[in-house]
Length: 148
Image 1 (tube, helix red, strand yellow):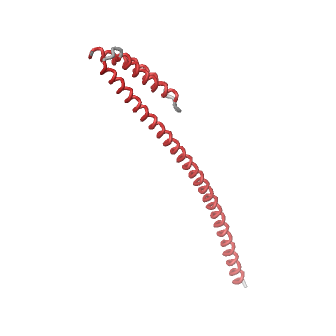
Image 2 (spheres, helix red, strand yellow):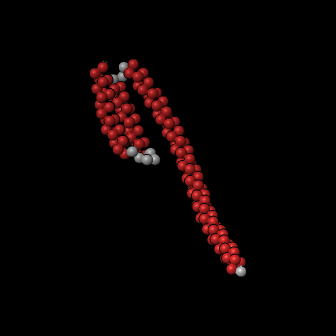
Image 3 (cartoon, helix red, strand yellow):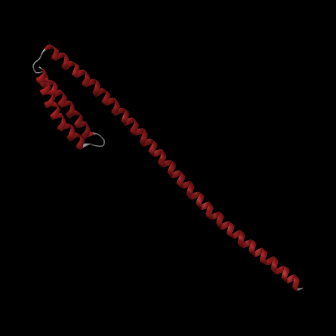
């Protein structure tokens, strides 16, 4: 009879060990499930962040294209103005040096104003451009008068 008690005790012990092991597995599975859900939320947040960054990059590309177009237009405008001044010089107008230097100075001031009024103002660069425009206009007048 004591053998039956031993066998019964052993079977009860095995059943209890199996229940404890199953409970541990369930707890571990729940922790893993929570971890996976947390990672899925993080992935969704990162996807949203990437989409936001892509949108910002596209906006900046559009802005840069606009700036490039504007700069190209300024190049064409300045080239045309310089050609006009050169043609007038060929005709022999005496005030050409002053007009040329004033044009360059106004062009530099226009650039300085654009630097100050852009989306991210560059006030220091605008001040430097203004300072250089005065110096360059002086040099332009000096060169023209020394050549004439």
